[in-house]
Image (tube, rainbow, N blue to C red; front, side):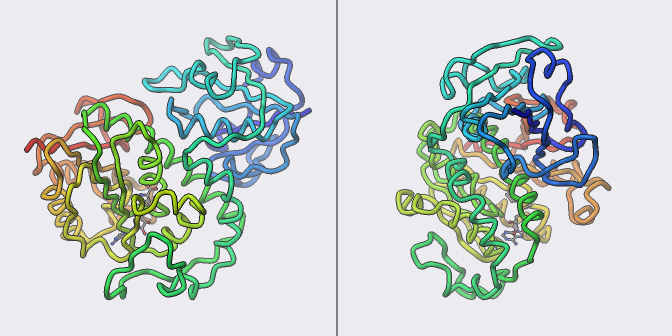
Length: 394
Ligand SMILES: C[S@@+](CC[C@H](N)C(=O)[O-])C[C@H]1O[C@@H](n2cnc3c(N)ncnc32)[C@H](O)[C@@H]1O
């Protein structure tokens, strides 16, 4: 029996030794991070991706790191269930979160059953849950559980010709723009290792965005059912999850995506669920610059995508979104603020003042934390990556 550790990144790949001692856990084995295999960094080393872990035995124990920022949301609970299913004869050790909206052990109990023990280590409550076989969750984690590895392999083997409009399966909810000339159909050929790392990071980041968006919809009292448009959705998991969740006010979601690989991989992940979603989850493939609005819009999101468009186009898209929004609808933007650590994108990124000015023309900008269910006062924002929300009043 071995103990593996799921962590955010290599900086905290070792589980707290006091926890290992208190729980009398087995020898420490592998470390898995959300950012994938980044090379040897500690005595433990890093073995792979927390969303595509390998080398785990059914009777092993798994520990979730403190800094994982696990929120009280169906997606995060489903991810923990997925991990618990990797050790049906072992245990999953989970810290109770203390941030607003962070995971409560009681919520996990409804999914995994009563913990076999709860202990307090270094002032934090940890729940020890027994592993159990996988059960579906009706979240996008089901898609990932069922087909994540398969999609990553298919993506590695993909040829650009597979992304030509005519060779995408016709029953996929994908519409190519009439000219289609601006659709990016080229594909990179990352190694399986790089793909695993990219997917782990992407799915993990998307779960936090979904969790906070669900909270924003409630907090800003959006009355459903409303339509959602997502600028640059990649594989469209955010929109899919909002549609799948019956407690969320979103009825249908459309992604405006430039790169065909996003819808291609999202639709492959969805598998047969596509038919049950019908036309509630769709992509319009081509540059968003030619989008001129959608009727009945209740939520427009741009999550890490606005900075990629020419500034005049991003301003025009926000205008169209604003004009389309119904009263009470939300414009929600999530952008990293320009910083030298984002070497490749720095030149294109917004600085804080520019982004505030761009959104502020529509109304007061309200600020929400990125990994907690919490509004921020303007003086708490700084250069943080957060959600910016503008409510359409009338
Ligand atoms: C950093 S990714 C963010 C993906 C997703 N929103 C998320 O939060 O995980 C940016 C996305 O914007 C897309 N994008 C870039 N330029 C675009 C354009 N002109 N029109 C539509 N999508 C675009 C990219 O292809 C990519 O999928």
